[in-house]
Image (cartoon, rainbow, N blue to C red; front, side, top):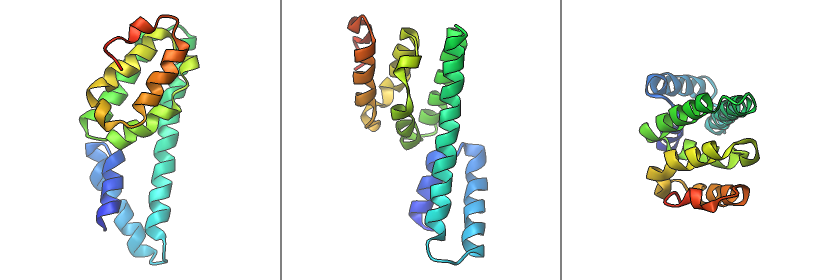
Length: 147
């Protein structure tokens, strides 16, 4: 398996799934020697994790709608902390543009910026998220120290 394939798999994999994913991709590539097999598999993995991220966000939005802000905050912190803790900065960065800030309350907006602050230099999409949140908030002072 080439270096690019392993990097993409590590971008998404939780430690307990990393070897499973690598083995699956190696098996698929070995079984399908058709040109472009690796790209198709990686594209499929990207789409799968995009769906997982969207499902997590939809769950957070449903918790906000039900006014279960603390539970929504726990989900956000657990998921993003897990990504950052595994070094899955690309995966976290892919999530940031997907966030619909109009469906969050101010606590969650600040929460997303707080949990991503330590990795801000590794998250190229974070600045755009900050701008979207600034436009949504009534009190921009809430973002002091989070930009």
